[in-house]
Length: 262
Ligand code: BTN
Image (tube, rainbow, N blue to C red; front, side, top):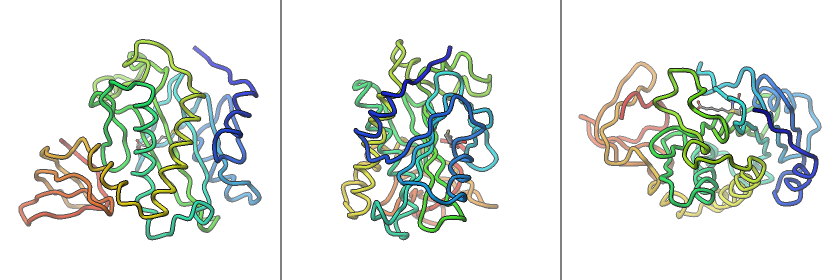
């Protein structure tokens, strides 16, 4: 199954979103790698979008790979934080804010679907992972962030590697029909612009919304942070973007780590 994207779709992206330049590739190893290369190479207009119809070496957090079967939506957005007025103190919340934007875009397409945020940077649909987000800070370009986003859209999970079949889902799996990837991309980018503006303003509503969408809240979780493991009932995500867990040592906020079980 292959989809081609005509030039008018790119023009739509440029006219309907805050993106100033677009590269749309049939195939790349990883859109984040390409974005990091572009950052190192110098002159780019931001926000700059790199999209690939197919990734051959998509990367997830840590050493994880990202499966992007045919029909997936994989892209990286290069943003200059000064341009969007997000100060460095709020950079740790960019990933959650991006997740919120994806949740809203997905909900607008599938209004009755159960969409949630799985801290720190996944979006779930019907309690299965539909989107992963990898935010990277290019060493070569000060004040710049690369937001790497992979959404399972028209790639069917029946075709995914066996280890993903119990935990992942695509929008087409949930909707039972194929969806318009460029239209979804436009929507996600519009939402990212809107949510980054809220982050820039320090709008407290942002934290209320990521707390409301947190799928770990009220559940027993195990978090691995470095060498240590912390377990307990989760109280959701606080206003700083930390996951709050009632551990044996009391209620503690965690700013990083991997959820091992929930
Ligand atoms: C995760 O779930 O661990 C994050 C996955 C991020 C995947 C996206 S796909 C587009 C961009 N390019 C990559 O190589 N990774 C991100």
